[in-house]
Length: 324
Image (cartoon, rainbow, N blue to C red; front, side):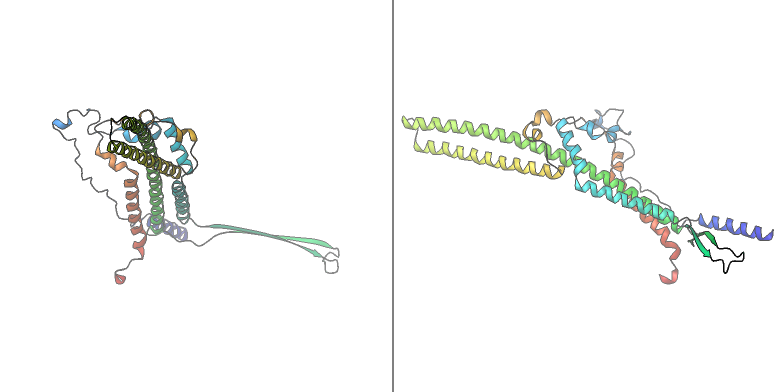
């Protein structure tokens, strides 16, 4: 009975020690912005529903923000094919696997084995004087030696791996948001340069018509050679502007193809203008500064800080003042 009591006491002691953690208590730094919405004449137009309160603007999906179907198609293709986003997703898978490894270290490994043998016994050595076949089987199960998490070192490593996983997930979100913004910006730049090219082509036609008119005036003596030279200069300038925007449009298409990661449908590259396809959803005024704390890059940095905090708890059991 006393032996049983000792075993129970040791078990309870080990369980209590395993619950210990040397991770320092994490405290989120205070935000350097004011907690109350400012007052004054400049803020009279801010709706009361948004001033100083949470806004659903950060919950707005990119499909709702971009109303142009062509832009939505481009962003969808980029999210499916972009290499950087694939790398971010693979990093998340690696972090998830590392977390599972650290979590498994908290439990002992169970091993099992089994074997069987068959042997023919001749009649000359058989106790019964008859030949027979003997069978024997063995099986075993056991627990491998494992580290008892007395001071919470393994739990700290598991917490660190979990925070690293959360950080990479936020990094993936940040990469996705940046990709969506870059694709939208590249597409709007393409539409703007396409409009500039149209203006340059119209200007060239106008300057060519002006040159022809000046040449006819010169033939009838109503203009001078200098007037014709000036008209030719404006035509050459318009030609240079047209070539410049043609080159810029080709560069825009190449940059957009690089972002998307695949070929772009021809109807998107050839059609559309900035006035009809460059519209974006309206963002309400009076957005709170608390939105900054929900940015993926800010959240990723905070998870990195928590991971470093958990790493302190994992290293603390091995620290000794003599080694300092």
